[in-house]
Each structure stands twice: as structure tokens, then as C-alpha cells.
Length: 155
Image 1 (cartoon, rainbow, N blue to C red):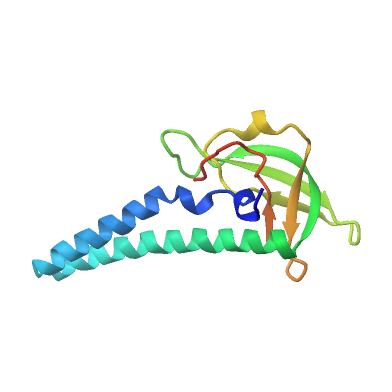
Image 2 (cartoon, rainbow, N blue to C red; image 1 turned 90 degrees about the horizontal axis):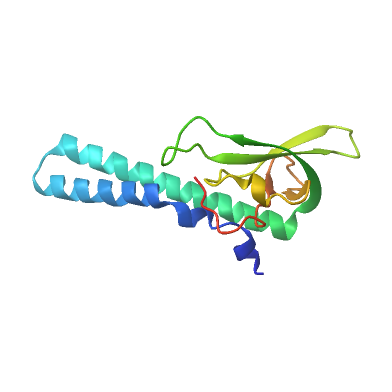
């Protein structure tokens, strides 16, 4: 399996941000032609929001690929699967896998969270451990590998 396949299809789930980008661009173009500057500014703002969401997701995916190739792989213990109640997609809150690991050098307990996924991953967690890739230079940068989940969609 190629590394880019193991890093989830995170940017492919940018339907909402793509819709915002195209809606805002179309709105701005339409209103610019009709010389309504305030409404055009709103369209440009909506387009910028969609573009920033898309670029943020691409940046996260690139970081995950970098960590998989250059980071330290550790085995963390799955401790919880939480729903992120801050927002809902199609009436369901996205889920996050939570895992912990004890740093053998410092004895510090570290907690890791996966990317948000729309389907409940509990039924696919067959092992109590997951792989987490940590940046050796900056340990707060990590990627919890959720490639064991079948075709899932991220929020």
C-alpha cells in the first residue's frame, strides 16, 4: 500500500469547502459584474473561507505523509472513541479515536487524537493498539494512523 494511500483521503472529503469556494467565487463574479461592491465582498469572503479550509486540509495531509516517512512510529493504546459534539454532519457528530502512550524516557503519559471521521470506528478497532507517528524534533506534531478503517469519510 502506498504511503499516500495510508494517509486517509482527508483532502478528498472537502466537499463543503469546495462548495464554499465555488459558491463564493460565483457569487463574487456575478455581483462584481453588476457593480455591487458590498455583496461582492461577501462572495470573496465566502470563497476565501472555502479556500483556507481546503489548504489547511492539504497541509495536514502533507504533514501526515512527512511524519510517516521521517517520524518515529510508536504503539499507543486506544483508550476511547469520542464523538465531537461541536458540530454535526448529516445529523451525526464526527468521531475521534483517542490513544495514550507512556514515554519510556520521561514517564510522561501522552494523549493522541485521530482526525475526525464520520462513521463510528469502534467496530473496526480490532487491536487495542494503534500506530502514531511523532515528529522527533517537535513531539506535539503527530499523526494517529487510521488507515485500518475501511473507506471512511472525514469531517
